[in-house]
Amino acid sequence: MEKTNYIINYFIKENEAKFSQETVRGYTISLKQFFAFCQKEYDAVKTADIRDWLIELNSAGLKPRSISLKLASLRSFYRRLIENELISKNPTLDINSPKIEDYLPVYLGKADLVQLMEAAKDHTRDRAVLETLYATGVRASELLNIRLEDIKWDIRQIWIRKGKGNKERFVLFTAECAERLKHYLANRQIESPYLFANRWGNPFSRVWLEKRLSRYAIGFNSRYKITPHTLRHTFAAHLSQKDMPQAHIQELLGHININTTKIYTRLQSIARKKQYDSYQ
Image 1 (cartoon, rainbow, N blue to C red):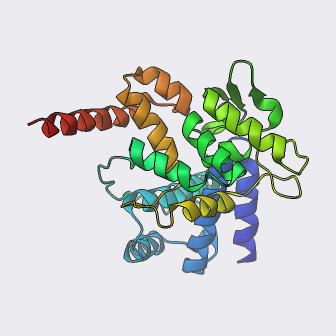
Image 2 (cartoon, helix red, strand yellow; image 1 turned 180 degrees about the vertical axis):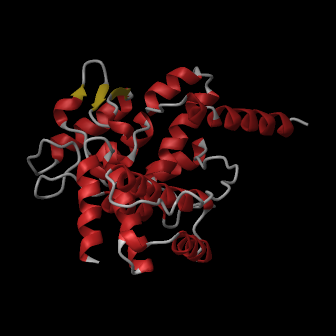
């Protein structure tokens, strides 16, 4: 598999400037998972091998959306091999993506959000992390790469240097979030250019962030798993319920396509219906 590993590394390195950090991470994991399952060199893979892998992923309980993302990494990989004339036939061409179920993003209600924040009230840094995730709606990778120099305290804006698709944007944060961040920074014992950093001054990992959030979700009276993306959904859902225009929410979230943002309008409609029903 030495030949395949070399090609995978070349493919990832070639596209690092074009892909976001999260895409690079996802593609790397998916490609290595597939070839570990298949046990064939890249130029010996058949369509049947890919179908067998997708069946295995489905049997393991992966959701159609996750399977579709993994298949997308294979498609991109083999499309590039065709362009470079390393293979003559693309084994992904006759593979259909799984049907993705229509779903609504999970978000926290006001009471649940307060409960989550209260769970971290005695830990200055973690409370600031939670507040920043909710106040800005940033992705996990975006939060972890915020530098102190990216924060404009006077107008309460944060420059997101490299969002999804390598798009930069500015996000806003509240006065309460500003106070939480200033209190945290005034008391932290490390020197680092990053807003949230470990003892060596390096940005925390996504795994660290997910574990910290799950720590406060333990014992939390919730029907669902709470992740950094849950707070992103909560940010967008609450703005939608306050009738903020979709275009503004799209800009703050960094969505390229407004159709991605429209799902929060459905959340708004459902919330209003529940409110209506409560009066009947």
